[in-house]
Length: 248
Ligand code: PGA
Image 1 (cartoon, rainbow, N blue to C red):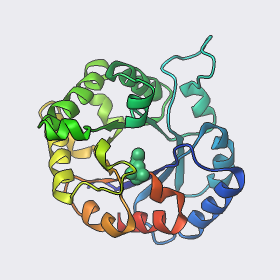
Image 2 (cartoon, rainbow, N blue to C red; image 1 turned 90 degrees about the vertical axis):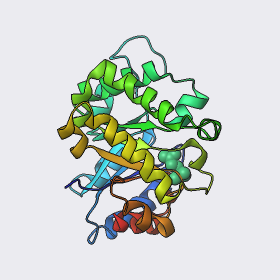
Image 3 (cartoon, rainbow, N blue to C red; image 1 turned 45 degrees about the horizontal axis):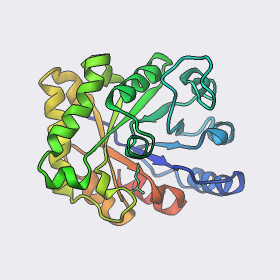
Image 4 (spheres, helix red, strand yellow; image 1 turned 60 degrees about the horizontal axis):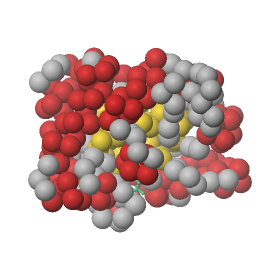
C-alpha cells in the first residue's frame, strides 16, 4: 500500500514573517493528518524551515538544484548544499522551469541524478501543455519526459523518486484536470514503469498537481493511481493545505 504524499510548492512566495505564520499554522494542524507532508520552499528560507520543522512530521525541500556538483556556476545551488540543510525532497523539471528557463529533458535527468547522488528524493515533474493535449500527444510527451530519466538513471532509480503529473494547462489556472483525466495519465505512467519493473511500478508514488484545492482533493486523491498532490497556490494557506493533506 502506497502512502500518500502531499507536497507544497511555495514557488517564489513568502517572507520570514509570512513563513512563520504558515509553518506554525501547519504544525498546529498536523495531528489528524495521515498522509506524508512536505514543503518545498525558496532557497533562502531553508534554514528557517529546517529550524521550525525539525522534529516534526513535515519534511522540507527545495524547488530546483544545479546539475553540477560544485565550481564556477554563479548563482547556482548544488545538491550537497541542499543536503546540508537536511532537505528530503527536491522538485526537478517543474513546467515553469522547463518553459521559462528552457530546461530540457536531458538537463532535468541530470538534476534528478544529482539529487539522488546526494541522498535526497527528487519530485520529478512531467506533463503536457494544452496544445499537446489538444493534439493528442499527452502520452507521448509524458513518455518522452520519463524516458530521459529512465535512460540516464535506470528504472530502478524510480524506487527512490516521486513522479508528479502536472498538466501545464491546469497549473495556477484554476482549471483542474478531471479525476478521470488525471487517473488516465497516472495509470499510463504506472503501466509504462510496470513494463520495465513491476515492483518499482507498484511502489511508485505519483502525485497530481494543477489547481488541486480542498474542494477537489478528495475526489482526485480517491483515484487508484493518484498517490498525493503537488500543491502550488493552496499551499500558501495553512487551512487549505491542511484540508488537502487530510484528504490524503
Ligand atoms: P497550482 O500549482 O496548485 O497553483 O496549480 C501546482 C504546481 O505548479 O506545482
